[in-house]
Length: 310
Image: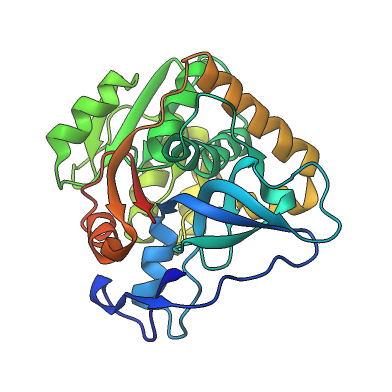
């Protein structure tokens, strides 16, 4: 089978395709013939910044071709999707059964990849914010794979005002998309202020954006950080407005609160089936063009999810 790998850190140019044997599923694992694989900002960052290479994972969707021991509820022929922590940029990949979700009839593999993992992060970050109907929300990276779903979910769950914050690259196109999905306002990161204060911020960027994100909060506001971008917040900036910061990581929920994880998955599929939640796909790339997909993410020019098709 073909898979994408890299041997040293760098930009998209370090990615290459190789031929390797098809893996065998171990206990609790599914072997999936991959029909679509999502490209995520955390993986793109790790390729460029981390010293040691990692398997290129993210999320996958496809057909189960074999199951390992101790697997219940899945069989060859099932269509599934879920976060893949191994080599996901491949024609076949291993998926932990506890992370898998059945893909309902009528949903494509591409839509499944765009919806489930990104939707779980968006849903969980919103939950971590302790949101209440009638509050104002601001979402960074709002046009990205997670952000555009978080914006819709905030609106669906009663936010009175939703602000999307985006980078300057392609800002006009991003603003058009976000307004079509329910945003009241769209701001760019380089603006002096991000408008009237909000009750909570969902931040997917980190780094230098943490400071303006905290400044965008009203007194008693909450910031939820789910970025791999790091960054530092001054304690005094929180103290003067009685503001708070919470970290969120969806893998921790899957391991420690599987019932909650499953309930979120079911709700995402319900909203999708009802036409209330619309995953947007920016582009589909062939597996051999993974470098082009990474370049789109690095340029921050995507409107929605970037997907690989093996």
